[in-house]
Amino acid sequence: LPPQDLRALAPGKWAYALWLNTKGRVIGDSAVLRLSTAEWALWSAHTPAETLRARLDAFIIADDVTVEAPTLAQVTLPR
Image 1 (cartoon, rainbow, N blue to C red):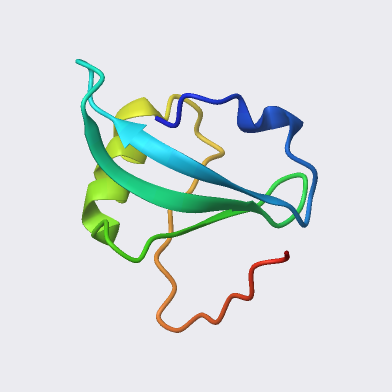
Image 2 (spheres, rainbow, N blue to C red; image 1 turned 120 degrees about the horizontal axis):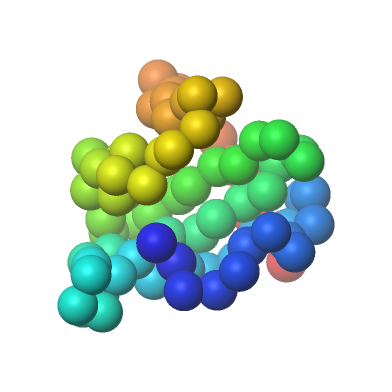
């Protein structure tokens, strides 16, 4: 997962994140957007969605977490 602690990210803000494997090797990058206190979004120009989904699914331990891939989304990153 991204190495920084994203819990402090305020709704409406985003952070650049590198995705690492267990050996610390970079397997992808993304923008992590906090949409609200309970919703997040990921966007990546170079990392396939399935790579990010697999990493997220590997760490989900709560029943109230759902990973969804939207069929069509348009996101504008705040500056």
